Amino acid sequence: MSHKHHFVGQPSKCIECGVLRSDCWRTPLDHLERVFRVLGDVDLDVCADINPDHHFAARNVTENGLEVDPRGARTFMNPLYSQAPRWVEWAWDAKAPVLGLLHVATASTYWHRCVWGAVQRICFVHRRIQFLDPETGEPAKQNRYDSAYVLWNATPEQRKEFDTEYRKIGWLPK
Image (cartoon, rainbow, N blue to C red; front, side, top):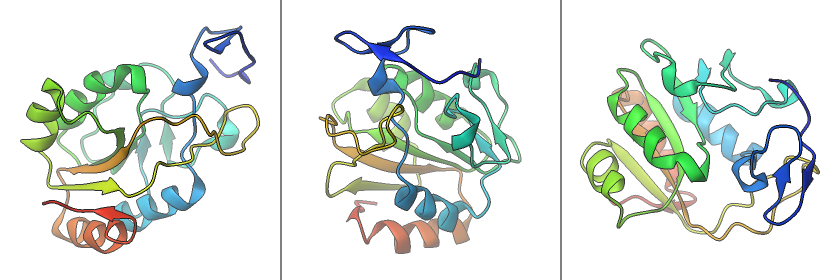
């Protein structure tokens, strides 16, 4: 499914595929640069934008990413806010390094089980991230959630680089 979203209505949904605009916000470039410094080349983006102009990994999965086996791949995910629990459980079960950008939901069951109890590193970002609007490419000002970077199954080098990079933009409790 490759198309350019066209959003209408409130809440704003794509007229072609029905996805919510807030589920399509793209990760800003300065944040992707940190991801590259931690993981090196990104082999797999399991939550890739449907627009191929915004693909950056060796393999970009735009549909059914939860069915992808990440073994052997350095994986990044910025999952749909509306489906975050499923993605966190997927990353928790992965047998490969996964760096996720998540909205903070510390009181939820999935955070307690799959984040607090399972991650090697976590960084709570100091400021709300200005994700990019999928239509305009400009910062979306509607982000009402705090964000965190979470790292599962990482190598010692990736953990060290995570600490170096993310200490600059947030708080690392672990």
